[in-house]
Image (cartoon, rainbow over all chains, first blue to last red; front, side, top):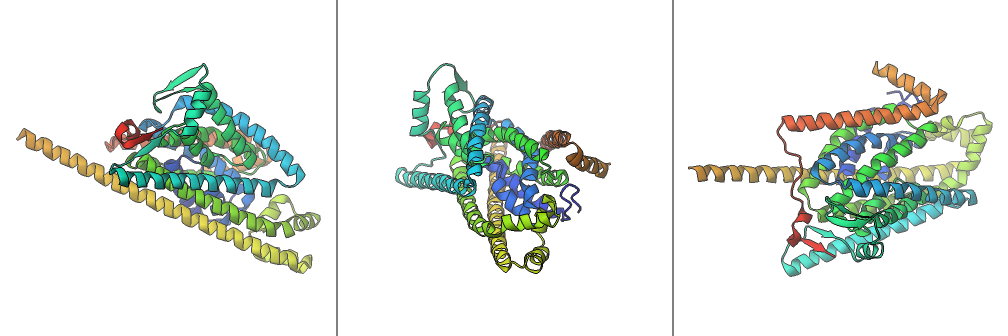
Length: 399
Length: 66
């Protein structure tokens, strides 16, 4: 299939499959899932320069579908989402300014990646230790814990920022000050802006731990935000010509089915289970950033001088980006034309680490997706069985 | 017709990026809303109840509250 904007040819089915997988995962967690989609698209031959923009664009449609379903379930707190959105955007702008400053200093790449690794690892370790603590508590008390609502941090934020105007959020069953929501929005937006990511993987834990929102409400409310942050991302990437609309539409078709499965599954699992799978996803995202950092060290050896060399040869940025997918062309220019075997050696290692990252992310996404689908099947089977039992009992009563 | 639409949109990416951005977002919003509504209609036709339900955090005994 020919992609008219990027000029590359690729099969349609990987796009449909990636869309479906990320639809299931995103609908279940309430995140955009760029850390899954971008390496996955890249591994199937989609140029990196278009991968992020295309992902952001399909995200707009996917989050509408998933938010609608979550809203029907009563998982979306519109008040929190709308106010938080204002904070998020102002935070993103501030964070983006700092990212721009770091880029000018030439230290953005590694600083951002280390910060991201630290943040993801901290979130993952914290959530995992909390999950294990709850499981231990369950065994001791002999009583099942289905979710945890609020933390000492959320209580502190709400006590400290308990300033007029305050709102009652019926979905989350809590009264909260406008300033507390704005504060959390600005903090998460700032972190997302400085990291240059959508922020769902940060916002969901922030809603749970800083706002004290129940897990399912955090998932639905974040998806509401993703609609707008995705639209913002799609807009800016489209302006730069970094969006392949055909690919975004195919991905959306897959995601529209996947998002239904992922979202419906949240009805059948408890909040504590969502947290556990989210923790696993956080660790995978962290691993992906570590692999990216390793590959970027090799990329630093050849990328700038090689691209400058290609530009001198008369190649456009789009042609250069597309060329990275063809190893024979890269070899030709690096070794045969430029006579730089050290560039070729660094490129090969960079390529291999990137591929490893892509394969890992695809495997992780497929595993998580399979787990969610199994949970959905079990949940539906349980519901059908219970319904049948109720009907049988009702029939017996009549007799 | 669909192929023509994508060719036209790809042309916009080069000639008018702002219009291209609007077309991209518009397409996604329209498709997202349409698919969401159609899916809801299908679930209703199949009589699958996907409305509001009793959540676990509404059951105080099974939730740890801080």
